[in-house]
Length: 235
Ligand code: OAD
Image (tube, rainbow, N blue to C red):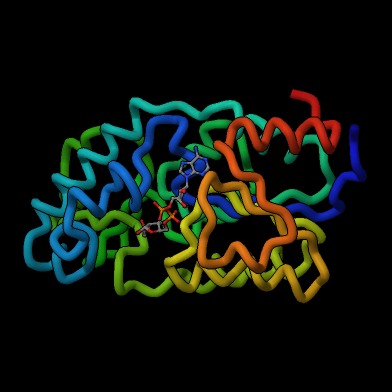
């Protein structure tokens, strides 16, 4: 049976959203941080000490993600974006999978695996070349992945736009996040101020589960298919 569609909907996604695409999550079984020490591969001091090692890790991730494709859950989100008035995707993911599925209104809280910046001359570069053939910018300095690493601050404009979309929504659907990384983890709570309905999609409970009105305990693709049916979203 269908229910009224949200007027302003936010999808708030984490690594579990991409799990069915074959992208490993960060925590839990097979999690990236179980295998790789972020202090060696994913923080500014590591980049300054050993950029080659940091790049080896990021090139490995670029290749891994290149071999993955969006799944039906990403397509539900894309279809919602096309068929509902106001839909925003706020993601912690850096894999670009929502964009690959066609989503346009995507706010990337933690940056992107596919964007680079040069901290010496300010140049930027975007592309899905995997592995990256030249690790250096024309000026000779190493490219730096435009990712929010451990210890980095989030981009102010992105966090403001995310807070605004969440603060104004009447429904927020959180999908596949362990809700342990701040400040991202607390952003969904801004939706409460507006009296929005909070739905959590995750096979497991999280430290934020109590803040949600509805828990859909299953994989993203199946649970999003249920929401598509509930809101009469055509696929
Ligand atoms: P985590 O790896 O911490 O959590 C993934 C969550 O997805 C867990 O709660 C799982 O239960 C859930 N999950 C697994 N498979 C799922 C499926 N098929 N459908 C739905 N949910 C599923 O990932 P994040 O919460 O995204 O930061 O991690 C937050 C940040 O920590 C990441 O953005 C990353 C990491 O360090 C950066 O890369 C900067």
